[in-house]
Image (tube, rainbow, N blue to C red):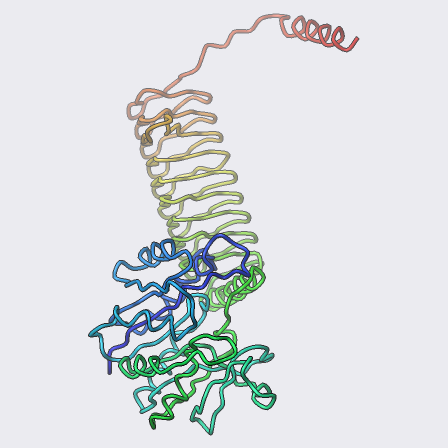
Length: 450
């Protein structure tokens, strides 16, 4: 099997997005469009990956290198068409040999199965392979002129005759071919056309002139969805979410109202997970089998073990690690904290930069005061500890195993194992003072009103 290199075109400005952000950095399912394209191409196990950048090139380059440190960058200083863009990758592919597949940073939904079929077509003798689709509304797509399964040429809409515009088999832009052949043919591409640009779509006709065959592999139109506007971006998000929810349901996840659940590109859900309505996942979440995520909860960068119950109205932030059978209740926020097996944080609490021991119970209103304005500090709560309601734990501090804190305490010193900590002012009752004070205040208000 010949090696494959990947070229992803990501140089366009995307002016119709009405954004200062490069188009390929807009996100679907919390991942840039560029990363979706790179993920698709990565299934071919490419020997080299080249991203061609232009508008906002430094930002696009940073994003590409976040995806993978080995990504090579080529720059298209002037946008003169798709063939010109691919030509900029020639130096980065020097000596690579094998095949090249061209993808687009704003076309995020090409599937691994489709790319595999393109590769199979190359292996069975096609000189150039083009990905096409039957369009419900061909619009301004380029048309594929074929003779049987052989591709004769691609015609851009603005250069097409009326007969050619009647063709519904359209060009996705995705192309694969031998690297040396592809770059040689690109060198012959002319800008003598209505757009005055160097079109990659001229390559099949140039290949035919050399006696090379070009073939079309087709896919569902939804795979070729390109994103040029905010409305199309929203449509892409909806399409991605629909497919992801359907897959989750097929894998054994229960959703009470699937349309209200929003998943991220890397969300991992085990069998028999239950998701109540209006649950939102940010990146980096794993929920193990049998866990229940109750309504209106938000999870990001966290791990939820089997048998946990989270929410409703809970927030798990990056670094939250819940061991099995943990309960996190309403209006609880957990960040960068390990909560061990069977522990409970049921109401109105914040636990950050902390470790909560097995079976510990944190009463309503517990707060780990972990930030002093400069540094983060850690709180440790031992196994079977009971933290009374409205306790402030001023880190760094440790509450020992089987220890108790009295409600309303501000704990600034370590509590030994098995000890009871009472850290609040002594209550004093002043007989009649409430009535006298309120009378004085009401009189003052009346004077101001008059």
